[in-house]
Length: 136
Image 1 (tube, rainbow, N blue to C red):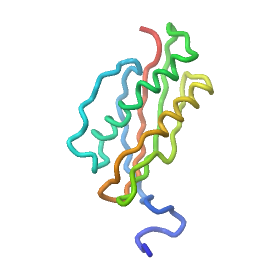
Image 2: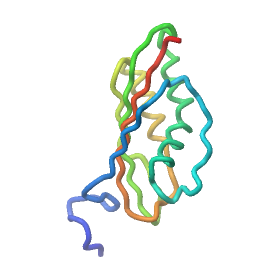
Image 3: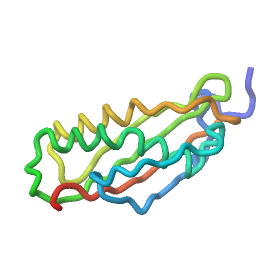
Image 4: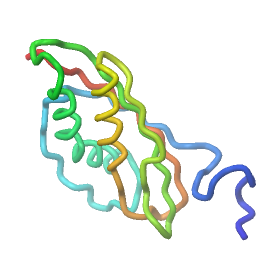
């Protein structure tokens, strides 16, 4: 039995999550990022890479209903939980901003698909990433 966590916290959920705030970018700016040297660490480079892998799905959600000439902003917040014996997965994904509820749900489902290999440690990470959407 583990004794390094409070009994009311799920396994793999440290009491103080790491929080990463990204400057953001345009949702339609689909630059390929090189894979990080190691993905056993849940750090900013790994998280940026993980978000870049689902960015085409987020863009597809946005383009599904949106007038392509419209502009706005969307902020995604993703909470990942890592377990050294299993994987690092999205526990929660929130989408707020200038999108319809159906676009927000599509984006949320896309963000929930992020999965990283097991981390070297129990880790909880919260990521805030704003995107500009629409317009040219």
